[in-house]
Image 1 (cartoon, rainbow, N blue to C red):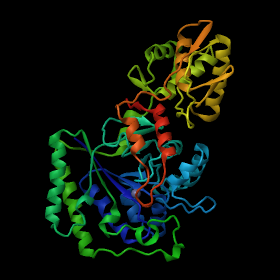
Image 2: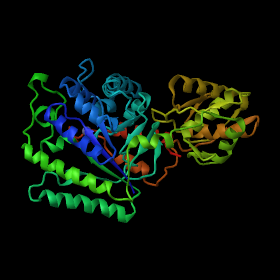
Image 3: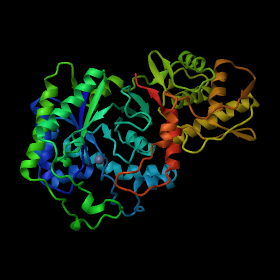
Length: 464
Ligand SMILES: [Zn+2]
């Protein structure tokens, strides 16, 4: 069994949380069990302003991941002060991306500068899995998405979604019993061992152990006295530190982690990894297709809209869409670029009846589509063909037919605008997995985000 230890490292209020972080990093170093510390940008700056070179150095021996710039609070007051999914829900895709890129680029930059290397893994913030986040982090050079979106958060098969490599697996956590008063530390440790062995014996291919260092110093969340349930943080000088455990209690909790990591390190059947270990194996390799290979993709597509394999490498429907558009515009080009574009970001047009057009008019539409892809990096939600508009699903099928045979008349049939799901209930799970819930106890209508997450199924493909 593979095992990944990860820590959502976010407390930038209490300096004592830095000691717990140091302790955890040292435990993992001591037993040679790698871990991933997903650092909040403001936490990295907090370590710096607290003068904690020792912590930065100890954490830097492990994978340094990323966990957003401010963890839900967005202090840029030139934007509306809203819970971020609420903001994403109301804004257009492009406006939402502009804000995310502006705010998150600071955190990615600062974590890279303070720890001396670029973080490549985003440890999902519980409430913020919206597809705009994934696309923004992919663009900021953070290509791995730990824990996964709602339709793929337990499944160990690595997939691509929104141009991020999704590494998900079943998870256990110290937090399941860390704060219980009715258990001794020995009983807590024994329960962690039992939970872990259950997965080992049950054949779980990969198990995660996910924890927050801040949980080792307090049973109150660090945001709670400051901005839980609100988007308006009080002025910074008024931030308060939640009540801490005694020093002995924290040591007792760290003892559990120490003993558990030691236990894991001694089991031969467990291979300890971290998220960045998956990158060399799964990152995309190919950059070009030949014309013959492009035709192979077209004949494989048939009537179904789904990812395709070519020489063992998978191509998402969005990537295939871009390949055909290019091939039909640059009719003599022999190197066809593989472009990692995203799916439509508006509701696709539903063409309910078939239509017929001359090849020249169709190629003209392909040219429009190709220019749109170059400008926007995504599949269009509507394509103008003559006097009507058609959706991308039918247009993809027509492009596949046209690259295979040069007939004078092209038929665009009505077709589904969403790819076939890998598992039958993937779309349902995306529709149910509301992205809010943690800091904001209010309920929002997030139907737009959920629909966007379905449209981005165009980017789904197995990682190979
Ligand atoms: Zn978090």
